[in-house]
Image 1: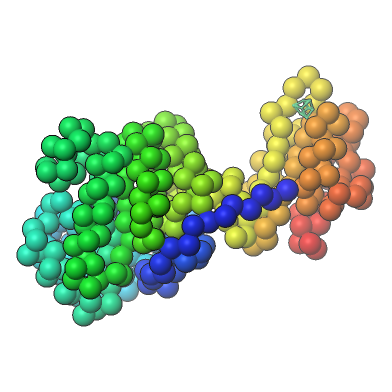
Image 2: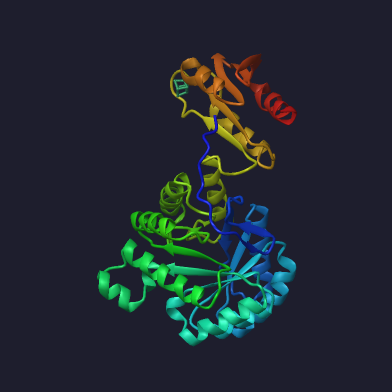
Length: 354
Ligand code: SF4
């Protein structure tokens, strides 16, 4: 059963061929952690991210050589590239001129003059900008007012910087207001979403290692997406394998029914009543349907306790009926009674026919 989330309508922008905002599909981003000057190493990570289905990849550009490397990276990446820039506005201009599809800047570490130059270049090249605000770098005046980097301070910082760009007649941007504190992140995005209709890039910054970062991101990003807030997301994990970030991001969207084409596998935790090998069947079905472009729910339960109810609410329902034997339902109707060894093949075929 899919419960639809009413999403907030935001302004549309484009990052390369990816539409963001105005109810476009929620894109999943990640970021390389190579030295961007090393084109081969960076492209290898980007290809890993693409294989894991990242929609957009960000690379850090802190030297002129790294913005020079963008020429080759953008040409070969096969996915839109965002250049992440801090401190030196010249890097942003080089990145745009070398073909990056978007730049991310944190305006609190760019001079007023630098911001004007960046916007001029972005307009000339039709390049969008992400205003990437962070609780660790809020403007001094705002911080003095609130004494701490709270949600209201982040929102004030966002509104101040939105005003600066609007004063330059620039609206081709999206915003993020990330904090490493999950509650602050949720509150800041909720408040900003009421006061602005620019597209929102949602994430919990510096979320931590794979386990804690996945949990923090799932709570923070998940709560906002469930509210209909968020146009593009990045799960930020301390990991060498950025595919982890993409997988978690996609799984968050899947869990909320926000991936346009995906199979959502519902499975029980198993217990003494379990009659079929739920764990292996759910895992094998997930693997077999990873690239299936259909929006369906498949439930795998160990017995009739919740099995029939879930089966009636799923596109395909599987539940243990007697030891080693399962009933299969499609669209709420019983269609087969089969041995557990045959389930994955049978159901994969059914999915193909739906
Ligand atoms: S559905 Fe049945 S087997 Fe699965 S956890 Fe519940 S009672 Fe146990």
